Image 1 (spheres, helix red, strand yellow):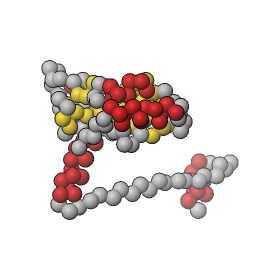
Image 2 (cartoon, rainbow, N blue to C red; image 1 turned 90 degrees about the horizontal axis):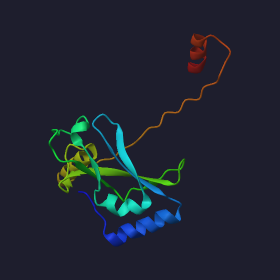
Image 3 (cartoon, rainbow, N blue to C red; image 1 turned 45 degrees about the vertical axis):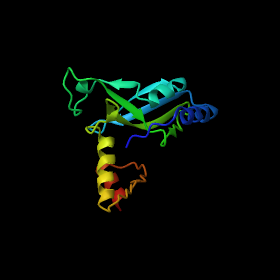
Image 4 (cartoon, rainbow, N blue to C red; image 1 turned 90 degrees about the vertical axis):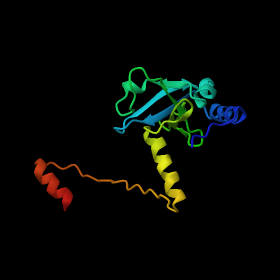
Length: 154
């Protein structure tokens, strides 16, 4: 479920990112409230990051189901889904999967979703996701706020 690349594959990814001007990598997981959590590391650290060097105290993050004495959770970036940030091209962002003892940590939202999708696949089901972006064009008018709203609707 969690795909860790070989050293050669990671080196090639590093070289490609460096040639595109990337200086930093950010692996991000999403907590149970939908809030992204991540760490930014230098591109030279990608090899370590790809093997789970970025650790989080699960007890300190709501919804990860850990106790104060539990070991830290490692975050492993998905190197198949790297996005160079258009507004800050020196950063390459990638989603990450949480692990505990090098095994997928099921209280991580992305890890759990991947697990459920695998179970659905075994039953002959798949998933399609469609995102509908809402766009509103608004014309600024010199009217009372309630009249502007009426004008927008018409």
